[in-house]
Image (cartoon, rainbow, N blue to C red; front, top):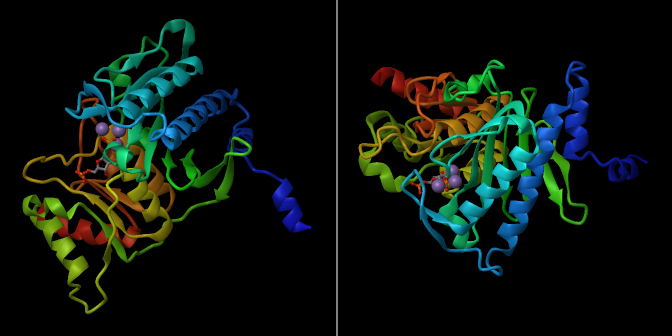
Amino acid sequence: HSADAQRTDLMTITRFVLNEQSKHPESRGDFTILLSHIVLGCKFVCSAVNKAGLAKLIGLAGETNVQGEEQKKLDVLSNDVFIKALVSSGRTCILVSEEDEEATFVEPSKRGKYIVVFDPLDGSSNIDCGVSIGTIFGIYLVKEDREPTIEDVLQPGKNMLAAGYCMYGSSCTLVLSTGTGVNGFTLDPSLGEFILTHPDIKVPKKGKIYSVNEGNAKNWDGPTTKYVENCKFPKDGSSPKSLRYVGSMVADVHRTFLYGGIFLYPADKKSPNGKLRVLYEVFPMSFLMEQAGGQAFTGKQRALDLVPTKLHERSPIFLGSYEDVEEIKALYAVDN
Ligand code: AHG
Ligand code: MN
Ligand code: MN
Ligand code: MN
């Protein structure tokens, strides 16, 4: 009987969020409506990514973004889709995207109480070769109901209400936390619904994988150099860790959630703040990692305590299995 019940008792992401919402009697369903628009954006991008090669959607868009990166067609398309979906939800007031230099302030008639920061397409360098890419998002409440300003966005990650990512890989997987644990949903294309497939994700306490771009080793600081050395030549006689690095943060972090280990994008001499952007890469992934029992560290502090001063600010990030991050914190403690 239970197998049948399992098959017919479909737990979709919408139903899951409605269940969550029922725990907040005061809620008027705004978050559920916001999330359904984010989910719509993810479904659209998933289908565009799957058709990219055929629909001539690969290659450059011919523009450069505020990051100084050449925008890919899919970067621009996914950005447009998410901006439109979020504005049409009528639940947002400020939108921050990796692809837009300035924040989008939603017109008063369509304004809601949520701020959404997002990376519409993460791992763009992997689009043309068909390697997994993703979308990353974080959700804040606007601080007061006065005219929203950029100050409302520059909040520490610990203020986030929710965060998530969607990975467009062999399957389309959406991982979400609304502050009470982490759950993973897989898109069933025949239903067009995200079904709960990874309930209550917990990152293993310790892992056997480290994930970093070794090509930057020449420019690393002491603690990172020492940590990576220990991964390869353990002093305690344990076996060396494996190196796994996809080059799409979503893919590297998703593997870390499921298999354990540590993901590092350290500072280096060329980029003293590392490469990853605080608001829409570091914060959402750090929020999720803490919710899954792991931790996230910047080399100086708990990542979620950082208070950003600029929209596209960057930070070094070390996140993953609790004990693995403890080791690198100890090395930076000596150094700081
Ligand atoms: P994006 O494609 O959104 O600009 O992000 C790319 C990021 C991130 O996905 C990944 O972890 C990192 O760039 C890889 O950088 P390197 O190629 O320097 O290792
Ligand atoms: Mn980019
Ligand atoms: Mn990114
Ligand atoms: Mn991106």
